[in-house]
Length: 458
Image (cartoon, rainbow, N blue to C red; front, side, top):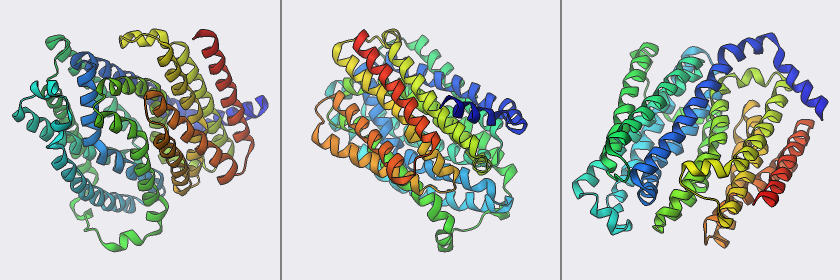
């Protein structure tokens, strides 16, 4: 197994990939590391500004308003895999068509959601409603609605920038955005202090930052696309084979992702368990930092997948390193949990330690699931990724239907879904290869280490 790992890693020493590492991949990693830490620090500041209960309300509100964003983002992820292989004129044409479809559907779904959210205070505790005047509530909804739509526009245009392989430009702008957000929230915290649950000020700050970013991306787009490139959407676009290979499967993946990953947040918010929702959000964001980091990295290099697919050793190296990365991250987060929990004003208890263990197990198992999904994308289709998502979320909902009494059950349901997805990919969808054997061995070693650590330390 060690020899195979060495062989896979040696494939990365090719001069072409060495050059790409120092000119593209290394800057991406550094920018995303800073961006991920900034995002976590922003959450910590918001928790201290709002308090646990109102932080849970804020999380629930953003979830409901950002569902269309979560739903349509994977469409543009599909573009990243497909567009680099097309002529330049075709790239622009596809982007314009997909953008028109997504924008129309976004406005329809979000308008319906906004009408529902107008009565949102009815399911929030009276203490929260008393602190938010009715006129403020309307302003908050309007500003956050505008912020989410601008965020959708920014993501769409920046995806085209990434698909055209302007990677460093894309990553630099995202890096600057995170730093500005962190600085703005930090300045607001210094001025206002803790316990200020005025959502309106935070909403205005985030809206202003997204608006400034939109000005930049619109100016970039007008330089890239001439007016005569804009064509009206026709039904013939939906009959193209690329639509069934990439965009429709990605819609299915995003639908199951929303229904599954956000289910715990929605249920806890709907049941008004906002303090428990705040705790779940904290743990999810800390453990998801590693997942989000590697996910953002893979999203950024996806325009190069057509070249990666021609190098079998490079594909295996990526798959093996995914398992190593998730295993090391999960073990480190579990080992250091008594320390980083202090930053969130939390202390280890027996119940919380068990929840932490399952969060770590979920993160470790994601190495196999992520590797399986990336293999499908590298091969030029998203249908396999859609099947993996169906299995994972179906098992998740069955488990959640049977057991949904506390936070631990939500996390265990996610564990059951990830295990089912890994088994489906390894033994049903794809024949076992040497790299999958290494993935399994690596993941099992880290799982054994985590369980042993939990037994000894907790």
